[in-house]
Length: 477
Image (cartoon, rainbow, N blue to C red; front, side, top):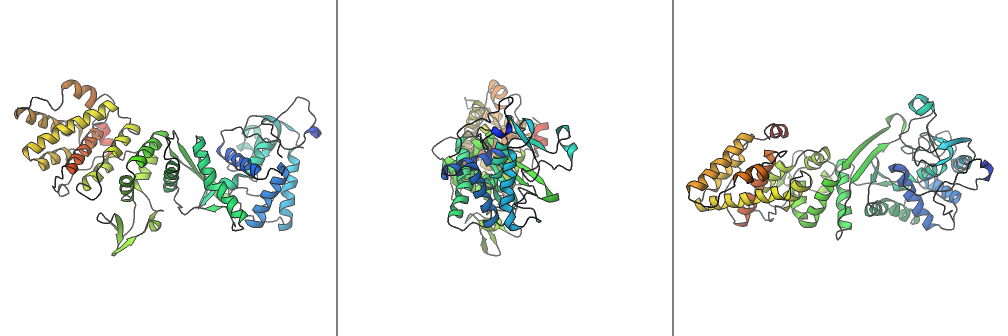
């Protein structure tokens, strides 16, 4: 049974030969790779309570060598398990020998991962990822041969492959909540051990989605749906990396908390609308989106999601890059008027509130103005006239001019209730720091929703609307 001591336990003057065994701390270090390996080791320890830590290391080494064929160069480049000059029958013994040496090192200090005082060893590429190698000592602090780390972190790193997924390069999802950690544990460690137990495992897990930009949103959706009755205050980071030879690389994909909250609210309220919106924004050569079937069609045949899930998706990329998708939402709502799927403005409201940081008061004011404009259009049966006037604005002054025209028309028709008061205009419609383009797009979305509810059937697609870039919107704010 593994020692339950949670700290490294270093005493001044303690002799090396008195250190009984590698003692593991599962306290979070903040390093995603070490913590993921620790998560895997902790779960495996619970599954094999009769094994001590060295027996667990031997068990993992046998999996790596005998079941996975030593195909771990992208994690432990140059280790006894992966080095081409190490005979197959020596890979496991040499791995055990390397771990036995960890408690006999003479270097004393503080681990660069967990901060614990311990007997240290260098963390070269054979032990950890993305740290350089001993050949480039000037790469490291004080010309050391690598990051100096403790046996506990080396051991946790050794179990990292059980918490990874292959998608071209390797991928690790880092979460900040217990629910997120539990999801990734089920996604990787549970599946790995299940396949190993059934003797069907021949490598680290492989993902069906190879595009990391798309994969992180797939993970987010699965996580949200798995805990559908709970609100998760989460943000996700996907590390897409390799530690192999000269191609060492790491790309980081981040779904920050505001975007995750928007996704969570949307998937729990209007999932069908969200997925239809997203699916329309894949890049598929030679294919066209068919609204009647909600599918991509190519030469008269439906293109399945499996065929395009690795293609570029403009919505996902914009969210990852911090660019607004509200304009794309506006076009989607316009195209869906009187289609089979209901129009629900909540998707846009969640985005405006969580990601664009619009206040509840501003959103409510835009909706209120939208209702008054709709009543005005309905009274005069002039929907297309007003919609084209609002949609065609590509500058801040044009949009404000269009609103003023509508305000004047409301007054000349003798309506006592104004479209908007001066105080509402200044403090709620266009408060300091807001972008006019976001106000325009959300107003249009509310109007499209009202038109859909009232079954107003007009064709707005014939009127080209000048596209507005984010830079133009900011300049005119």
